[in-house]
Image (tube, rainbow, N blue to C red; front, side):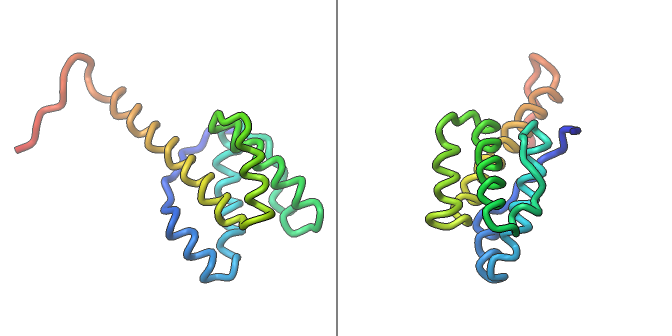
Length: 126
């Protein structure tokens, strides 16, 4: 799969929209973040498994493992997985989105460094 450009998303706005829409936006949020994680090499099955009882456990297991692997957090997939079922999946989604946003910021910073000529600092604006 081709490496797609990640977008920085507002975590608080996504949480609010999830509550306002009674969870429907949360489903969209899972699908969008799944695409981002999968484009970076994550092994996540189809999102249709979310609506199938017991199959959704397998989906979230794979989702959390792939997210933790992308963020290079070895044991944190367990935390994400527990948050997705016991407490509230919105908390897990907010944590995952925050980590995705960090990757976006790192990539923007790296692309700015690569674009500027070596040895020269950008001119200061007056």
